[in-house]
Every structure is written in structure tokens, then in C-alpha cells.
Length: 454
Ligand code: SF4
Ligand code: SF4
Image (cartoon, rainbow, N blue to C red; front, side):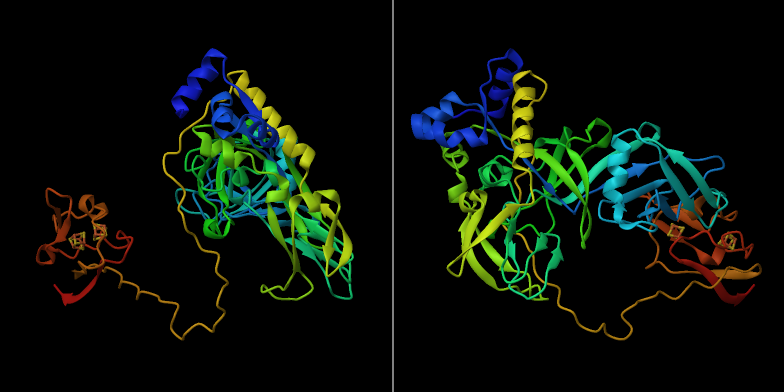
């Protein structure tokens, strides 16, 4: 038998949908078999809650009076990237405060906003005729912002290496504190509750999948960066309205000796379309293997100390070279379980409907190391600036530079610039009177001062 997402949504609407969290599927499939489990269950909910450094938020502040093209922006002394439109900025979760260093960062600003706390907004600009303001200092809350969109380039790793340290000194890493001589092992991920472990073929999780993100509604917008599904290292790029999220499910963290990160809570529903999906969602912790990698080497090519599965990791002990070593997680299993349950409740209450992917995620990706090499001389290509258009000179026009944007059409009093039916622009420079009005009009330097005196 098979079902469609539309059929499942009709069951959500009429209150007959049957939802279970992913950690219950192994026993259900064992008891009923995959075919019957697929008939009995309509949706499996997954959940994960861990430090996801590749996170951040797009913020729109609105224009102050007079208006401003913010060229640099700080929120509580944490710089946000402002190389976009006038009053938009991207606040990266891991950006450190300029005054508090790694104790406070972008993730903390996001959490403060979610708590409704006011945040200091400072901006500078060079000032233009349309955006004359050059400085700004004010405070804003989440409610004051026009838009606040959590936009995370790489979340929800399908699997991740466990970490140990065979060296002689304590190490402080994004995998937490690693004791010398393999004194401990840390690991990340939600195991059998992990979204991408429950859909390893990426059959139902795709572009446009509606998810529970930070306790609010979000969407998968594509493969995450360093997406590598062929080696079971898929990742997700996600986005959602920050204003609908909760500080319970988005928590800032200052990882000692490493820096700031954001714990992101994400729940992904898996529609039970057929028995194959039932079989895959019956994955257990003991089926999920990972490598224990040695972080003592200052290299991206770290040696592997051993292999283990999530059941061993969750038991609190793993073996490295014949020795028992304590293991502890960086992700919260109780929060992952809570997220899967919250998503289950919302679906059962008719508050959350499923979406079929608008497109499948690709079957292959890339996570290659960066080849570091000296740049060749002359690599920074700069196009020669166009000569200014001076009064009394006929212009020169470079067709190969022209974008056909049309800005020059309304400028020239003698109709030098013309368009055809396709809005392609041409210039008949013979008609130029040399008035000079088109100086500094063309954004790509197609109009330049000529050499011919009139
Ligand atoms: S302004 Fe420049 S780019 Fe635009 S149509 Fe005129 S010549 Fe072309
Ligand atoms: S210099 Fe004057 S006449 Fe010549 S193209 Fe420019 S605007 Fe037209």
C-alpha cells in the first residue's frame, strides 16, 4: 500500500492522523512488520537539538529619519554583515562581541531578541544623496524589526564524527573539552531521532519541506553547505520566521576556548508513504555508526582512532584501542525528544500540515578541502574606469559594456540613445551635441568622454 502527502494532510484536517515519534518506530516495525506499520502510521516525527554554528538571521531595521545606507552594523557590539541593501544585515550566530569577545556573540543577540529584550543597534555609513545619514545609535526589539528571518546555511548533519584527543594537553574545541591521552570522547547528533538518519535516501525531505524550526514554522530551502549525501554526510539549509520562534528551542552557547554557537532545535516530519519508509524509520542507535577522530593533530586530515555506534556512545562508554573511555554528548537528547513530541502534537492538533518537496535534494554533493596556493599576479581584475563625459566632446559608447538597463534613455536631450522593441539599447554617437549631461549616468562605464572636439 502507499499514501500521498495530500491524503495524510486530509487525515490531519479531519483529526484521524496517526503520528509517532521516530524513537518508537523500531518496536512498531518489529511488532507489525513494515507493511502494516506503514498502513498504521501516517507520520513519523524526528527531532534534533544541538550546536549548529552555521546559523544566523537576516534582519531588516527599517529606515531612520533621515534615511541611511548602513555600511557597517553592530547589535550589542556584535558586528552583522551589512553588504546588502540599505537597512538589511545578516547576523551570524558565531560572530563574537567586539567588547566581550567569545563570551557573547550573534547567537546571544538572537536569544535576547527572542526574549523580547531591547538590543543596541549601532550603524555607520558614508552617506549618499538618497541616504544622507552617516551615524545611528538606538535600541530595537524583535517586535520593532520589519523582518527577522532565521537563515541557516548548514544544519542537521546526517552524521558527525565523535572526538577524542590522543595528545598530552587538554584541548578546547567545538566538540567541547577533550582530555589528554584519550581521556574522554564527545559526540554530536540525535541518533535514531535524527531527521536525516530517518530518511537517508532523502526521499521525503527535500526543497520546500515544512519543518519545526526553533519552535516555530520553517522550511528546508535546499542542501546545506558541505552537503555530501553519498557518504551519509548530508546537511540542510533552512529558514523560518524568527518572530514565530521560542527561546526554548534556540539557545545561545559560549563553548569555552572555542567561541559562540547557537543550539538549534529542529523537528522534521517524515510522511509514511510506503513500507520502505517504515523500514528506514525503524533505524536504531545501534545501526548508526560513527568514527572516533583524533583532534590532537592540527590538521583537517585527522586520524581515526576507532569506530563505534550510537548505542555505545549513549551508554556513556566506548572502547579506544582496547581501553574503555567515557563518552558524553554535545546535543541534548531530551530536547530532541521534546521537539519530536511537540511536532507530533501540533500535527495531531491540526496545527501543522506536511508539504511534499518541490524538488529532491541532489544525490551528490561536495565537501572538499581548500587547496591553499599563492594567488597569481594580476588576479584582482579591475576594469579601466570610463573617461568622464565633458562638455564640448562627443561621447564614446562601448556596446560590449552596455547592460541595456535604459538609464541613459531619459537623459540625453538629442536622442543619442535608443531602444528597439526588445528594449536593447543602442547609441548613435554622431548625434551627440556634447552637452555633457550623460556624465556619470552609466553604471557600467559604457558611456565615456570622447576624443573628438566638436
Ligand atoms: S546606462 Fe549604460 S548600460 Fe544602461 S543602457 Fe545606457 S549605456 Fe547601456
Ligand atoms: S553628451 Fe549630451 S548629447 Fe551627447 S550623448 Fe551625452 S547627453 Fe546626449
